[in-house]
Length: 281
Length: 158
Image (cartoon, rainbow over all chains, first blue to last red; front, side, top):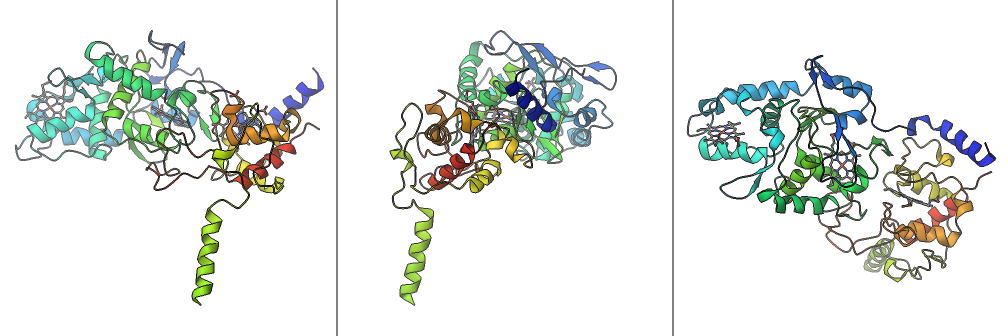
């Protein structure tokens, strides 16, 4: 060992907290029985990664523990509330979700395929759109706020029905132009800091950025319960925060730009289990 | 009274705009990534520079770099290489260039440009997420850059 290497090694030892590692190799099994695919071979279309990881692998043991048992998962309160709302009549048409739909289990598999293109309008839609369409047009009730507790509770309840199933969004056919738009956004270096999603989540996952351990920025766990905010966080709210942190003018939650970005980011996670509702710091 | 008030206002305006003799972001000239000339003509203060490098609201360089000399600053990142020994590896002019706009040294680098005020895609009003209401200021002032460079020059391997 030469002198320079020695001083470098000493410098490293002096800062143990900063030297964190890549994704850990714990296994994500929920309630001791549901085996999640939290590590997978990257989908074909992903040029710059070989392996994809759930954000769970980048969190501390304490945060991870909250997600492996539904009794400990603080998101479940909101999911339970949504289950009550599902049965509750609202709006001028005098209906509840349950008036028209079978049990919420009937939505199993849907979240794994979202976002998708509405065959009638040709527009890309996300889960919040499907829910608000039923609320405004079929129940004649007010639309829910995108990142509000009602909306994200319902998105999480419907997502939970697909838990464990691999994400499998379509990126071809009518989805292709939206996917291209989202991909373009993912690699755009926004803001005064000129940082793209890829700069942080593709080139630097596993590295610490200040106090944060960078993940691959996957959305298979959304809506996630964020301990810091003590509530369910929507996908678009997370995108907004990440773009704002580049000192940029962000896009709005529920904007077409974020729908396209959501499709692209979801497709990067094709093959990972739906983990909704995940727990993050 | 009116005269005093006017003077006071003039003073405030001055503080927020560039000092006379300063090289503006758009007028900086790079040679192989380096900037030979001081941006202000006033020598940098390494202690102020250390604060700027460590403070989240200022340079926040430690978000991406480890700096052993700032061991008391918690949560140092690993997106960029440790800055220990930067004063040996680079000249003052090269460091000035790296802090002002590292993309002139490392093409396409992740490192943001700290003395640049245009050419951005959807720049915001700092961290509000909103569009800026006026012309952008560079992230660091000309004297901040000089202070940071002075600090980096002290980072030598013993």
